[in-house]
Image 1 (cartoon, rainbow, N blue to C red):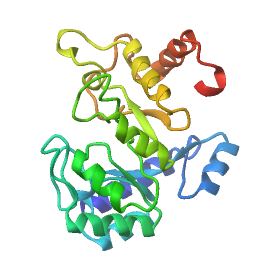
Image 2 (cartoon, rainbow, N blue to C red; image 1 turned 180 degrees about the horizontal axis):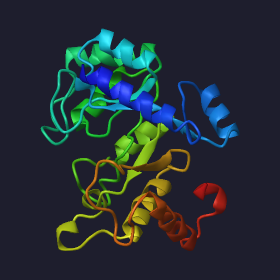
Image 3 (cartoon, rainbow, N blue to C red; image 1 turned 180 degrees about the vertical axis):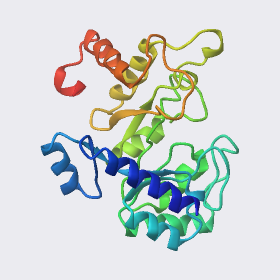
Image 4 (cartoon, helix red, strand yellow; image 1 turned 120 degrees about the horizontal axis):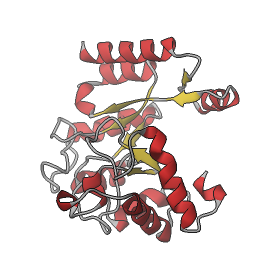
Length: 240
């Protein structure tokens, strides 16, 4: 029931705003949305516990879901969250779920997944996967961030990593002061230095965090990041 309600909400929201956003399921539809100057909207599921069986996965896929985050902050039947236990990986059901997603060309997302789960997925995945909203653990040693090795594995297979704007994932001492836009730049700098030019995107986590870096108020403030990167000497092509 919850899956049906969420899918119906997404369908209604997009339909009611068809002058702004187009629901996309394929690369061709993405290109069409670009041509029409519309936002290309792809449906995603954060936390595969919403999909307890292959029937639910099929229903989600038919409704346009094209990316699934394997866990949120809890353990589920498919795997374990980094927040719970980094040493517990994918279950047998989780390995079957990976196969079922890849058969439907649904992207898998390792943000929130445990370290052991990451490497289990790496062993079993036949397609690229993503970390939709995770930063660098080298720059900020938070369990939700990626090690350099993880980042390189995602890059080598042609996946993507989305920078997260959560202050706690940007700097370790956040409890004694909010993060700055320069902290975002530090993570981007680091990932670019280890081969991230074709890998990085903005994951942001707009709907999932309670604070932004100082000076940022909403999604419209994202230009502060491009301005800061430009000041660091990044060229327009890379920023675009």
